[in-house]
Image (cartoon, rainbow, N blue to C red; front, side, top):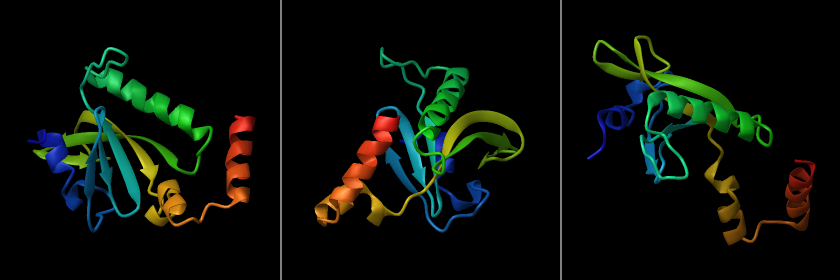
Length: 139
């Protein structure tokens, strides 16, 4: 059973861009909502020993840190931290009302451009590997 907030974010009307469809991927630490153009990652209220997301303030802090750190390598992907709100019973991304949670907002990349797909289709060139390696060396 999903928490109320996660269940609400499966509905297109919860998003400012009104996506056509929403997919949910769950990890041990997050709910990841994939819309047509964006990805919203909401941290779960968990304490795994090596990380503690048990309060809304901690989850907001770690959302901000994730964006700060990952923008160094992918500034065009990590768009920022957005609020999830409750207004007259409706749970909305970037809405008005009481802030009940935060999410990392990312640009959704095409599935066919993901490394696992490229590798499976034997479409990774030596130039691509060199480019990735160079980016990491500069980092």
